[in-house]
Length: 426
Ligand SMILES: C[S@@+](CC[C@H](N)C(=O)[O-])C[C@H]1O[C@@H](n2cnc3c(N)ncnc32)[C@H](O)[C@@H]1O
Image (cartoon, rainbow, N blue to C red):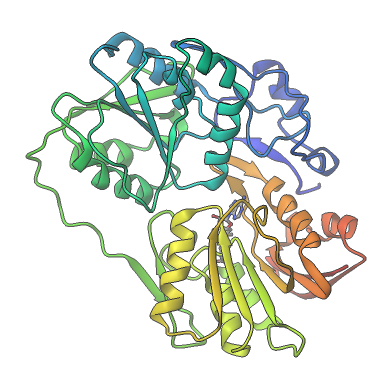
């Protein structure tokens, strides 16, 4: 069975698509494109009105919507409690494609919406969906309204009347966000956490209780639920957990893992298997990209066998890029380096002699190989003439198949029971 599929863990696949398209073939995911979409189900009727919403990156024939029942439920709840003449400053957190931010832009003339997120792709989706709905948004009162986008590594400014949080995948990110949020709440702030029931373990509710104040949960609707805390400014908080750090095993190097970063407490076994096969010591290698760098394990390991090469660390997660930067500087590595939060290599002009990649198997709660495929496509376009892409992947995903469609030569450098390491050359 091909490993190439895309499966939405959230209940945001329209029912008519669910059975037929829950498993995608590689040729389907291969249709990924930024220019076109056949997704007809992009009309979001929220409690605050209608917006057109697309996912980013756009995919042809995707069965997935750009919103889920948790977004709908949160907005419906807010509609009952908001006083538009009083509640002007709105913060959305982990809003995937603008399902929370965009409908609220229409609220009243001086509403200001800030969107705080750890994902570059989510912010791109919000930007593009804002453009798509621009006409509607500016014509009502003649003012241009766009959400202010804040990366997770920066703190939002001022106090917020309304905060809506899509519950993130990791507890560590939620903890970081709630601790930061406390300085931006008042006794009158309306705070709404929302998520799909199957992702809302009790520990998420407990975190709201411990870090915000007394918390209740709503009844489930369309498999979504709300977490509704009341802010208690006098809450005694337990000390913040220490930042996770561990060594890069073969070398006396320490990796720092800020919240939300892949392989929080120990080196990933796929990464570990990859380390002896990075190929950074080849003489012609002058530029290395660590694509989807996480804490920077691959690029930092590469720096140990090639002290001259320029290394680019890039990841969709702002916190991952910051972790890689911190790990790099803490270990006093002397290679020239740059650090960029971006979706794959979409903002990169340079080419590399070596691209190292341990691709992700999900985008937020959407499981699948679509991001891996996008990384391979972009890597192919960013290689120098002699350049090569090296990838580690679960054996059952058989990345050889998509790599062979893109590259002239694909070799398997090593395999064990779980992983294979691929080398792809143009
Ligand atoms: C399996 S982890 C690998 C992390 C690190 N390279 C390692 O080996 O430990 C995949 C990484 O890809 C990142 N990622 C996910 N989607 C991305 C995208 N669209 N563009 C760039 N990076 C992405 C994730 O944030 C994650 O850090």
